[in-house]
Image (cartoon, rainbow, N blue to C red; front, top):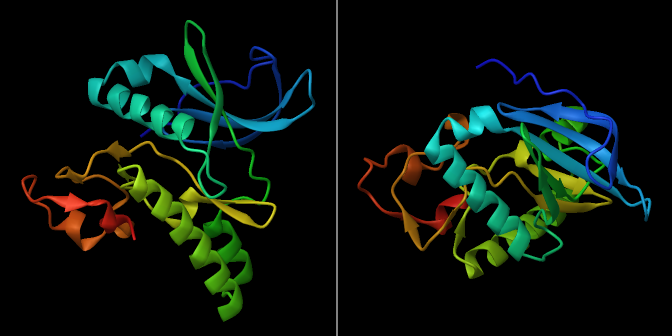
Length: 195
């Protein structure tokens, strides 16, 4: 699918963009500074036209915002602010300057056991919190785990669902759990599938 034609804005509300961090299917993510405090955030900019053209995606977007807005946990991406213009939605989230776990693994090639255990404990802590709030992530992969000053942060809740169970086949195919891959659209799976 073609990347969206979203440009880095000069200003978004009380935030000034400083650099583009990445592009996704529906928009871009950029680093921004809050003008009053100087605090650095990441701002996810989503093109309205593409999102609004598919009702299911709009529903998933609402769930993504709800999950990040309501959960306060060091291992879960948080939504601090949101805005919208005539053409875009903007989500102000944690800025994780260390990139993602997939990038780190590519650089390091392998992790020492002590580091792997450290990372795994943080991932499990985040998913324990998600499970407590009945959130299914459904797109768990290394590229959706971000590094924020030595702390792992689970992010990208674009396929998340708030429920005890689900049946929909969603996610990145090579990272899907067997429960999701072999789901027939009627087979139930729980948020245990994330881990």
